[in-house]
Length: 452
Ligand code: GLN
Image (tube, rainbow, N blue to C red; front, side):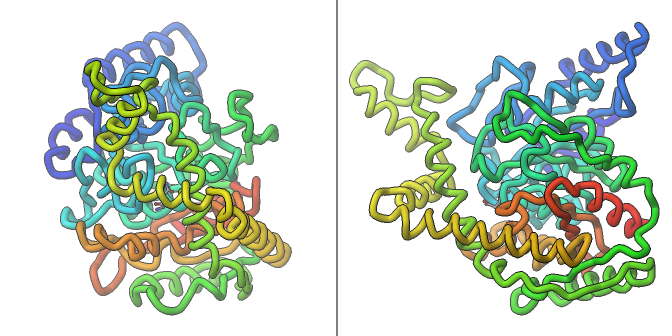
């Protein structure tokens, strides 16, 4: 049924980069026979899922929406992919994204934009916009994404679904094509909080193949989603997440959520996190710096595309020609920015400073979580914007991440849940719930109660 739905809606949405009916159906048959032979597969056995095309899959291509990886077929599965396969989930296909997960709108894909199911003239968010559109548009009940600066929470918010960024290190990066390794975090998309929790638990937990994986028990997020009570919890509102740039309809829905939390017995406290104002510039130094280093591996020798290999060019020329042809403009912009920020003489002024800001942000979170159990904010300052509106203005595009980036820099858990529609455009608004490192269960507990 989902394959049929995909076939019927793809001409409008373009959420997928790769769908292969035969591969999907053979996976489904395999799960059937595992169940028939008495294997215990857990609660998601047989449920179809769409994977962001940045997770390695051994039976489907993996491109990160870049020309430089066109046609690449990984010889192995990412840990997220492998664990979900083992749990009996069936892969519907690979979803569109901003090239190498760099963007907030999915307009930076080398293979065309994905459209928002609520309004086809608008963006589905990004970078995991294919995964958010697929779940929002009923093409898939579940999908995976990655969140480096907001790329799960922001697309979830603007398409009216649930998206969770787990604690950094709580979900494995092995087999996830790297953008900014100290920030990249795999996480789930679903249409409700409980489904997201089931998926979260199915792929999370320690992985020896990822050196930054946390060797600690996975927080019990499914139980938390079923807890059903938040009375006595202390909920903080961050003073710095307000002011210019927020759409009135977003603020109105946020205020409704605050009232609802109060009526459910939560205590609302205003907290101040002064360093959050500097999170955006710090992120846009750290993320490009790490990207410039990570993307050096696309050298025309190891993967996919190779341009100019005709006997008349040197290896260096083939590398330069391939990277010039294979990377899109946003990726090039970030490689240039990052290379500059890391170069000797500038390192201390830019990258070093940004790392110090990162420490201050983590300390702000620590101080805040000394006073409250969770922090809340709008997920994004505005609802889904029209396709093309910010395409030529990187600074306007970067503002979409204003509220999500602090949690990436500090590594703590944060979820976006649907929070009604904005009055001025009838488009979905997201509520962000942030919790301490390894406090992922709190995001689900509060989210599930509000959802009801
Ligand atoms: N929009 C942010 C960026 O472009 C975040 C991307 C992400 O989380 N992958 O870097």
